[in-house]
Length: 634
Ligand code: WT7
Image 1 (spheres, rainbow, N blue to C red):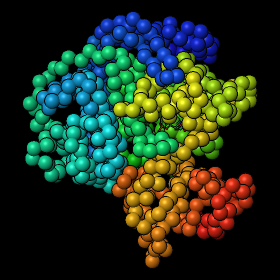
Image 2: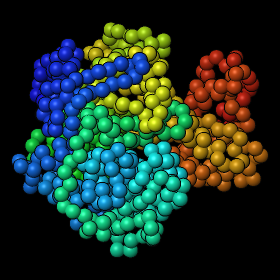
Image 3: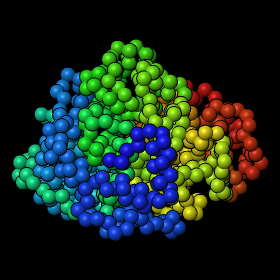
Image 4: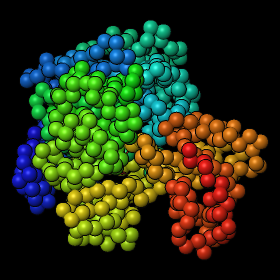
């Protein structure tokens, strides 16, 4: 892999990547296995949006993750699986074993009618078979759509229907701490509303199993028993779709972000090697669920592309106690540990004694992802987990970017707490004001955009390219707009300040306020609602919902619980509001637009400085909401 080993190296690679992006990326790409070479490295336009990397080339991602390593490191561990129950046996899969399982499961997919280009939904707990499922899809050229197994039946059905999946891969149950999640029951409920699904293949993880639909459902193990061992990797065009991953935006339903085979592979592989400075034989642990982009790029594909040993953890950070992460680090001699600030803040609240109780001397590099890491959490992580020895790489990126974009390279970039620091080679960030004019010079603050394509960028939103154009390329024509606000300091270091659109980041999960409003509005008594984010000590942002009811509910607390149930039903527990305030009106302008700025201020606990309220239809509503807010935010 093309790797950066010093700061001088970084500067040279960066310079080369902007002077001659095609030559730079061609060299990075040459480290992978291609069945056919490209005839053009890059063709692109941001207006209208179209980008094509490695046109003409053919490859298979699973071949690059597995077959490529067999000769040199077939016996090395690819996946270490740590179960939810600390007493239960660990599973280890060597590259050869993973290769064999993926081959055989790829044949299961084929035996069940899956062909290149078909969409397969994966709704599974964190077990090695989830990784096998993704790699098997990649092997036969099926497009996977992994849905986090915390989303509700309705949310699952919406995603399956949007992508018209023909097959669902799932399991009986999932283990999360002391709770057991009835995954198959959720799938059954969802599939009642999914006409495109012909078949579900169900992994049995407990002796009890689960009810099976007589014609639709098949057991994973019986299917495997009937499948042939070898499945040659399907030759894929570089720009063929690899996967769809749904994510929330500021409007409407979640959109299916599309990544393609060639560019995604090159970017996930290149960034993993550099951002973590991975060394052969190291044990790497990313705590993300495979249902999120971090799980795709840095639990699975990035590490396997580099022949790394990746640890997959089924459970949660606080089970059986808040020392679990550190116990697992000690047990498996983890060298690189990658998690989200929300986990750090939550574990921080239990005190230093938990990390202090374990031998963490194997740790070499720490990573952070998903949301801005505050100064206090950064230092706690640095001092108590890294024991002052380990650099922290604060990685900024998005589902849409496919891989890390801005991050310090461990022991190469001089780190600065709370700063994602400098762009990786090939990445050209700029800050623009609200009119789209570039803000040059340092320091500067503005909206974070990218002015040049990179191989891992999204290609479209599934089934609706105009939505992709509208969402990312219309706000500032000629630029990709991230939706994030950002500050660049005197050293040119970037610090992400958070979303500037109607997306909130709750415990590192992206939630659209419109989506939560739509869910709340399903309650028969709700006339209208408005949802905003507010600073939350552990979650980063909490969800604050203002709700107008048709009649004053007899029992306000019961009504609030019903609202939460409604959101859990439509989206899932991760989108449940932290605060529900009943109001008799919302601050609207004469044209009917809700002034969210005011609602955000009230949710933050501000009592004055609401700015100009003269354009409001009824300015007195602000005082009434303010009065009602007092004392609600626990
Ligand atoms: C949004 C993307 C990228 C994987 C996980 C989240 C926020 C992400 C950072 C960071 C500050 C961050 C941004 C971004 N974000 N990483 N290091 N510092 N903010 O992926 O669900 O697509 O969310 O997460 O606001 O836009 P995602």
